[in-house]
Length: 127
Image (cartoon, rainbow, N blue to C red; front, top):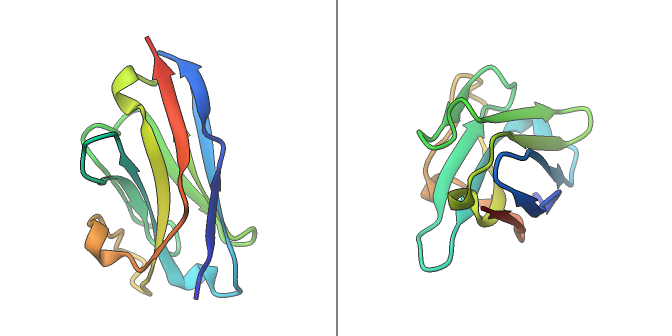
């Protein structure tokens, strides 16, 4: 079992930056690939990006490439999402998720691949 708690969301203006954090419980964090997803009102949950257990592999949605960076600190059981140049269309609830996966070259990208989810943190970008 893994419990995930996101933090760092808030209200920002277009062009600003935010860093989201996701703290995981348990001593086996380094055996989990991690993902960041988001869900805007009336829309389906979508991938933002993922990172393998070692950080060797990452995946980014087209909307996130060049603006967002995923990283992790296995010693702190934490995964981060650095978001730069935020746009109003980035407004959503952001969720982190975990998937047991020992393949350090795989960063899962689909909602259905992940087993554990956090409660989400709201990000609102004003124009």
